[in-house]
Length: 391
Image (tube, rainbow, N blue to C red; front, side, top):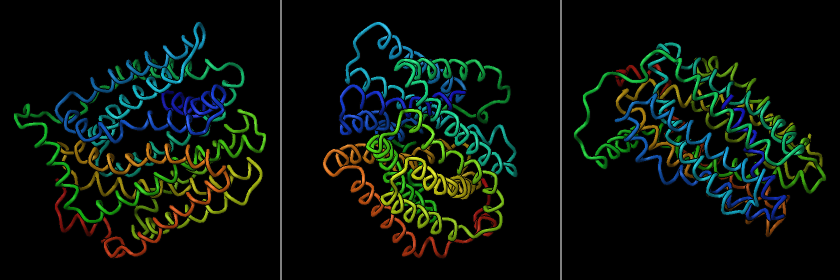
């Protein structure tokens, strides 16, 4: 429910800003504000989540996001909305997402047996992409009825998530002695651990490059579809193709993780995304744009499950949030830069040329992956675990 609500407003934010200001650059600024916390807070949040009660962190984050989105719906209903208010709500929502996502990810090995983690990660991917499939068309449709409806729906979804978390019974972390170390030292421990694992380190950098392009292309697709005369509902359907592709990918991802070498998964997925991005610049139908990006979306869960399986197999529970935050500050820290870049590229070059530039970024990431000796020579997970005992 909560992830569907997030996807609803993911479509509604740019549509709202474009409707109020007719400025792709300002839509990019709102996207930048929502994802800026990835750069600012992931590192300290990782250390704090490893200290705090993970379930309590998730509950507070859900409550705060419900209030933030509800306030935006109320202003749309009874007041005059400014761009500054949208930016503030987007920033608050993004900040609380950082804490929620780190606690959720770190709690997963406490809920699911180790041998079932790849399947659990794939099912979580299916949940997220299923939300894309449902939420993005619904976001466009709700916005077409009333501008406040998407934000009210998202506020309700966070409230539902809050209540459902109360009924999850297993502990979200191992019993631990309160840490006496300084926060800076704990943050550094997670960074040093990640930096010492070459495959994880290089994969994080490659994900950062692809996330930069992906986040920018999403806004570019919305502007391109509007240029082609698409309605909000059609734009939602266009974006839902990516969710449909990713759902299919999540079903095969555990099998791929077990049977396909990780170098093939990483290098192959990056080149498929690059070719798909280049293809977007040639199409003139919103649904065709969605179909191509849906094909690209199929490979997202395959890539993510392969990467997550390495991380969960090797990282100790006490370091999970800190190592996750060290990875995400790089991998997701590129998202706000992509959002901001997309806004100004679209403003200055138009949607087609902006997509070509972003496809060039994806090609560069594919070249880097192919050239990386670490990626080409990394062992299979079972061989790596044999060399480095599972914590």
